[in-house]
Image (cartoon, rainbow, N blue to C red; front, side):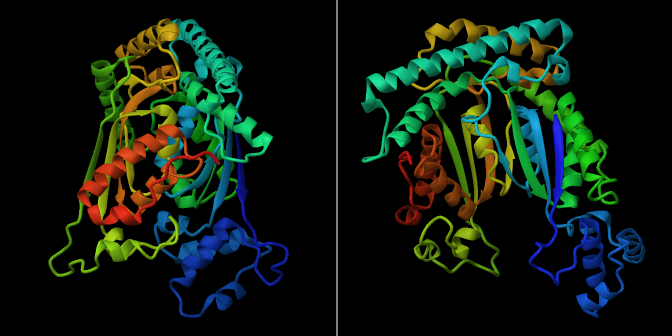
Length: 448
């Protein structure tokens, strides 16, 4: 694991903009909120050549909590190389205020050499050889299925949806993606990836605190590495980022629930699709909503347009019983509201084009290892999962953000399985809010 931190300063062309460190920015803005002098006057008393002295002087005067000041640091960028897909998923789950990116499965190395060592992940010593052998078999299944599907796409080109008049290079890319997007369910969740996030000191402190409170060794190692890097950029405001009892207790209870549910529902059979959507349109009696739904939606030119209050005030919770981890990794990155999953294997998804029988032995052995880790109460059970493992997933947000996600994940270039899930949730949303149907652009996931 390698962590690199980045802090922004004004561009060279902004000659009159003060070049301040993240903590000096936060302290100056904190002082600004307790003054009517204006920012220029405050900056006159700041020694940019000796920022630490100015920071300490201001923070001594301004008795705000560290969290409120930490939120003023601006964006601190952190790149985290060579972590498991599980850790990337977890960081995005808990960093609800971050902007970020993760390496696509289309560009990372699909090989057993691209796995962290078993001891880094906390896999019990006596199960480590079994885990390594299973992961190697999973990668072999991925490569075999990828090669078969690529050949199938060439032999039967009508299987692959290719835009009319597409250039040869585009056709080749779409055919490769057709194979990868269907073979990827054999990829181990422990596979290494890279991610980068940008958020304030306040949110970084919360993220690191949460990571340091989790039972997985990899999470705590990441917390230490991220903290070490961020202390170079924001030393005062990252001090409050150690493990904390309330976080630890909630993590303990969530792990116990995952083990219980995991053992109850553990299965390698495919789980039939089911979707649940709850729309709450209630408003307080002294502030009713007068805008029709149609007026809230019809003025948008695309999914980035502004929705009216009739949609923005509407709460939506949507859930699937069987979201494969392959889809969970991306849908989990929609930041608004709250997401929840026990992260268990309640079934195993394979697309219709992928035969189950040739891989029955692999799936049975993977199931056995996951069961053993659950029975031992090991937090490392997450590293025995493959991307085809199906888990319940719930997301609560507001209707404008739900519609944005649904339009995005059914639109041009969307993964075929995203489109199936979001189309099902949209259907249930339209049943409850029928006036929205004509004004929401449900797509068909045509390739781009």
